[in-house]
Structure formats: C-alpha cells, structure tokens
Image (cartoon, rainbow, N blue to C red; front, side, top):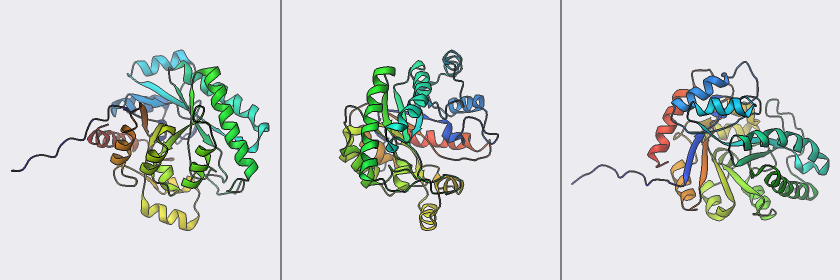
Length: 306
C-alpha cells in the first residue's frame, strides 16, 4: 500500500521573514534598487510577516511613519543592522556608537529586539582593494571581542536590544576557526551569533555542526544558500564578495548549499524562539526578479515546516 509523503514537522519555534537584501537592496539610496514602497508591498504579497530594516535610510526613519507603513501591510520588524570595525580599538567606539544610536533607536521604536552587527570588510566588496590584512593580530582579536562585549552591554542597557554578531564573507569573522575563536572569547550573556547559512557556507563552514556545537550562542538566523560551482570559481579566482554576488553565488533555495531543512530542524531542537530571515543577496538585480523568487522561497520553507 502506498501513501503520500508525511508533511515536515512544524517548526513552531522558528519565525520566518525576509529583508531588503532579498530585493537587491544594499544601500540607503541607489537608482538600481526598487523603491521601498514596492519592497514592502511585495514582501507582504510573498507571504512574509517579518522584515529587517535593511540599510539605514532605505525605509522611512521616522518611527511613526514606518509603523504606519508596516502596520497596513501586516508586517513587523525583527531587527536593524550596523557595520563596525571594533577590532581597530577604542578609537573606533565613538563612530560605532554614533551609527548604533540611530539604528538601535529606530529598531527599538519599531518593537524589534535584535541588532545585527556585521564586522567591517578587510577588502572592498566592489573593487577588491585590500583595505586591511585578512588576519587579525592577537591585539586586534582582543579589541574585537572586548569591543563586542561592550557593545552588547551598552546596547542592551540603552535600547533594550540584544546584539547578534554576523559572520560575513570578506570580514575577519568568517571561517569555522574564526567563529569558534570569537565565541570562545566572548561572554554568552552579552554576545550572541547571527548565523547566516550562506555566508558560513561561502567561508567553508557547516551550519548544522555550528548549531549543534554552539547552540546556546545562536540568537538569530539568516537563511541563504550558495551555488557550489560558482563558489568554487570565486574561491579559485580570489573574487571579492560584491562581484561574487553579481555572478549569482547566492542562489535561490533549494538549489544550493547548505540544505535548509536540516538547518531549521537543528535550530528547532534548541527549543528557543528564533527568527529565520531570508536574505538572498542579489545586488544589483532587475526590479521584477525578486518577487517570484520570494514567493517560491516562502513556499519551499513551508514545505520544510517553517
């Protein structure tokens, strides 16, 4: 006797959303990007309830205006994002906090609870210009870890948000080795991780292994896949992240790696509430490309139980 396949178990601790990144948005203002109104319309149409703010200034920065815009589309905000170079030492703090104060205030005012923190690039993501050595010194590691702990403490005290630090291609926090070193050197009470499955795979990491090893440190997820064939060419050619994205290295699920079903299942086993925000880097892309992909991706994630 034959029967239909059993549905995937419900992932009731995972809250799925999307972000401007999945609509080809990398900058506050760029003529090649879709207008913010279209992003909000289409992310709701695709079936998502949660969004990130994206680059500060892309969406309206007045909380009352933005609240009105998201409410009428039945959307909610999960997080804001900053980039920072805290590995450079205490002299970097003031510039970092100036950025944080803008983004974290809006994030808080939108009812979100997380600030995604991305380390600065060591090579330019467009030109491939080497900006800094790819490896940190011991002193720089100490600056990075102590700085992130201070950031975690002060963001929580001032804005009531938790920071989630995002390993990212072409930054100093990328590989399994670097991520483990960072987590082992930081206070779990102050610093959690935003695991971006695509960036981690891009840099050779295993997301399921990371969740199973450092599960208590996972505070947030970005769902993304890489095309292994394009990635192999990118790595062999030393291609920087921006041109790699333009080549299509970040691909539509389920066509790449890692498999997202096992990642989501491992995250569900942590038995904590987690956001899982789809971020398929596509800068630049044609205006009509994102929505069909977003609809298919949402359907796929539902098939995984999310």
